[in-house]
Image (cartoon, rainbow, N blue to C red):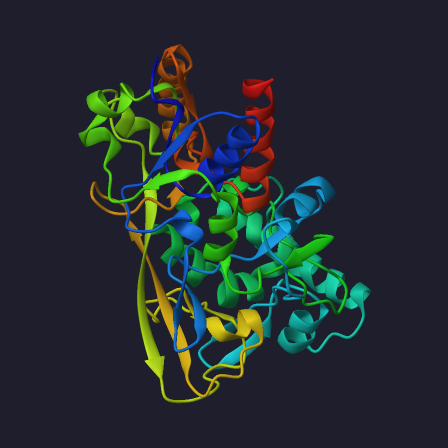
Length: 367
């Protein structure tokens, strides 16, 4: 008889949801994490009374009512709406690209004028079938907006020119012909009052958690503790990178406390020129409408991932897709292990999707 029914590797959102459901079903769970804290990349820590998003901005948004009701058991959400602004050499533009953006860029006032301007620039660029990200962006928003608000930012984010990136990366770029600065067209949106760590703490209430435990370094002993493993770490690392390493983009943050109550007037400001080395600045207090006398900002730098770095975004191109398909075959054949989450499935997941998938897997598993 093993000590636990499930060993859950990773105390992020996927692991916490699965652990909560398994405990509810009467299962014995042990959750481990190699970091010194729970909540994975949505971890928030208090600094000067402000909940700082240590691993970058996380804004909860979903159209799935069941998921919204599920998270609302663990936290009360505020009314924060994601409305980032873009700074191009001191010129400020609204995001997502909408009538405010088009008016500032071209002086147009009506949706018809904005559409005509985009069509004219698309025709001048001679694009019919977009072959790369640059052509796709120009066909969606025209040359001016591409040059000022897409080209530099995207180049920094992915570490390669837009002409070398696949068109599909930007297919979901929100373009609105309304004066609406709400980035996510989601029915439910907000930030948990008190931060995400408190929310995940409630999910893990009554579940045994051990931190600073490196599963892959102690795999043999840890596997003996439980009947099954739920693994949310990198899938290629689990198999010792034996087919090669999957590529990721990593992110580095420079965070500082400033002796001012309001640094930039918005939670997120994107720096879209190529010359500014960081992609954006996050001012954390604005996520929760803070009135503290000081403020905390984080400059975000995008970087190529190397072993030892924190993997953030999967590089979902053909080469990595094909390599992941091979790892997935190994994962599917691995007895007694469930692979889940952003790293376990090599997939860029929004938070609501992570919860949706974890609930669905738990339901099948615990039935």
